Image (cartoon, rainbow, N blue to C red; front, side, top):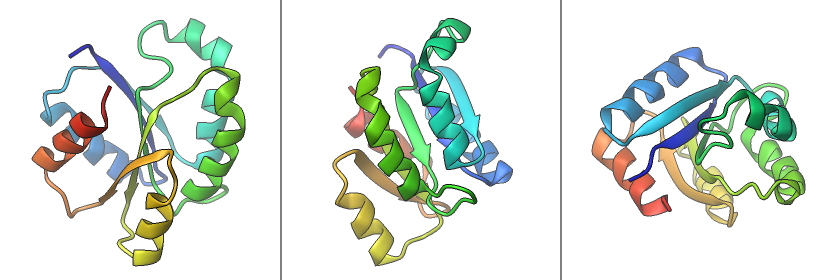
Length: 140
C-alpha cells in the first residue's frame, strides 16, 4: 500500500491527538497528518490548493478526511455542503469518514445519506482494528 495522507477536522485537540496516535497504531503507511480545528479552516485548506500543493509536496491533497460534526463556526455538515461546491475545481476526491461523539440516529442517517461520506465512526466506540478496516474498505 502506498503511503496515504490524512486531514483530521475536529475542534478538540485531545480528540485530534488520540486519533493521530490510533492512526499510527494501525500500521497503515501515512506520509502526512494534517489538522484543522474547525470546518472553515478545513475548507480554506482545500481552497488554497495551489499553495498547499507547493507547500506540502508529499501528501497533499489528503487521501482521507476524518470529520467531526459538532464544531464552532462551521460544523461537519456545513463543511460538506461547501466542500461539494469546490471539490471539482481541483479534482478533489478525499475519502471522508465522519468522526463524531454523536451516535444519534439522525446524525448517522444524515451522514450515511451523503454519497461523499464513506464511513461513520463514533468516538470511543471503535477499536484500532475497526479503524483499520474502515480505512481499508474505504481506501483506494
